[in-house]
Length: 390
Image (cartoon, rainbow, N blue to C red; front, top):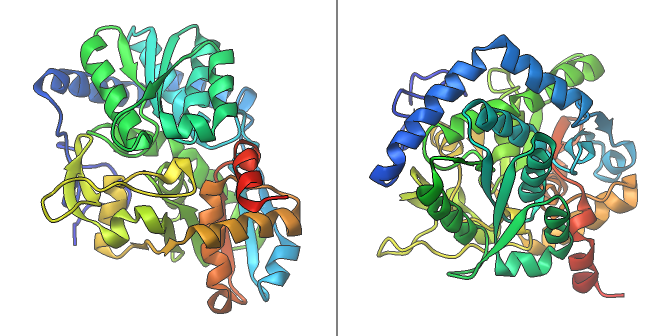
């Protein structure tokens, strides 16, 4: 086990234990090093932090509430169930926390164009939103499959002034959108900042994105202690790349709380993968016997990714967090369960976390469980209409 502090700063080479690093083309190494220096400088600058905090409060709507789900908790047999309501942030998910930080950082670096990848569209919408707010140009890459099932978010991005470009190679989902965004960045690095949407990619992105989301964990811990008088017994979040999970886990990493990151069964990089290198990082990765990346599958476009952030790989390897998986069928049931019992329609991504809680209800009776409700389900309603029928 590494002697690094739990969810502390990575090594100078960007490592969390055996995972992370900076595996990028030689042309991008200076850009990554520049970003590392710029982030460290900004994060130590009280003026930058104050400007970001002001935007998170006055524009994004933080702090997000903590909601106790009495009816659903009773239906689960007596679970004290709490939701951290990132679905109530401006743009409808946790993504705005990281994007506002990166957009301000890009402005500080003198870069007036943002390029981003998106799966479910929430990161793309958040990036387009921040670019509109700060007067930046914006290009978002999105897999053709995801564009078809998330038409509403494609329209929102274009309405906000972003150019949305389809990724037509491979599985035409999130992995391929990342590939296209990185190709764009290589060619335009002088005036472009790659606004990566999760705790993945080359150093310093996994660390930087987690730090921008740390506000989520800080708030949640304070709110849980105020409501319960203690930290929750279990903290649960969905994991694709893993940004919302990293954000909320960071608030409880040094506590007794059990940390549970829930993966989709068809994209379980930790549960079904082996260490490998993808998108500039070393982490757990779904790959075949020849080292070829396997396609991930999930009903949720935001979790349709064959890898996972390197810090999650380290948390799993060290035993600090566990990473079970749930099936699409379980997610569909959980999506309906929260809607029916609490009047809250979740995004399909956090419905994975709820699905695990529902499945494990017998072992959670009498315990307090905090779930990161990382997004709202407006974007998924059309897809679920087709799945569920009349």
